[in-house]
Image (tube, rainbow, N blue to C red; front, side, top):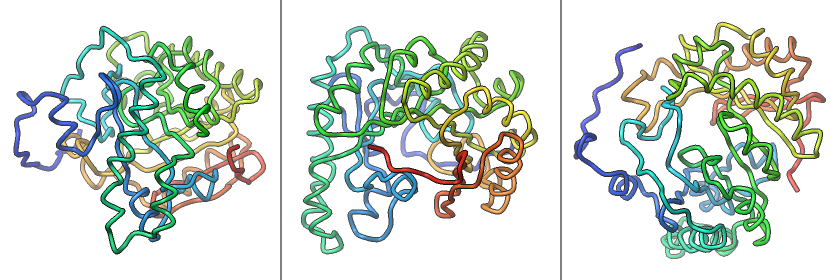
Length: 321
């Protein structure tokens, strides 16, 4: 592995609790084990200075998107993850109800955006709209399929007028079979078990086979009417050597969309990787084109600011409903 940069924290990763670390990083607790955090694109959209690529590709209004997780637990320690995999998440013994989580998330989001109300840079209309989120991204931290009532949580968010995006690492196919979000993302960051072990650092040797099983489940979800996407996070010198391998796996899942996105040198990933591991847009585009040609997809769009290219079968993206 490359030599990561030296980062001087004002605290010890060996001694700090996950709750305290979350507080310092701007997370808001939502119940006992869930959390909410605003992203840079929400702030940009609030100020009228830019929107997330999911806005132009899928119709998500950035300042009305609530980013949350129902659990901090994860069974992978991906080298590119900006989350603090170096700090152990507390084990949950009692789970909050979906109803409580949704209400606490909505309260937390309102509290997090309060400062925009008095900001001279904020667009007043956007601030007013932001108080009523219209989309939830269940992907903030941890693996959401660990929450045992995820199907009911999705339903509860939708009862509150929100579309639902779920991002999973694909290691829990049994739960993936049970959920029907507006759009289901599955991360696919390796083409072989050896690459998977090196990039995703699973906590169990059984997880690669679970990921392979989830590819078939993703195909089933699409056939059942769920919008599906495969997301590949590319890391220079780690997983950009096998476009054909990715294409073969994508064909197994047959998703509506494929996102090829660069690793971003932010957060705790800086402890594991270098800035040089980020991939330039031209390289992403070239790698995406290789995958597209082999898998039967077409270029559908890109965002240089987010270092991402999106593929689809017909070269188009559609808004989520």
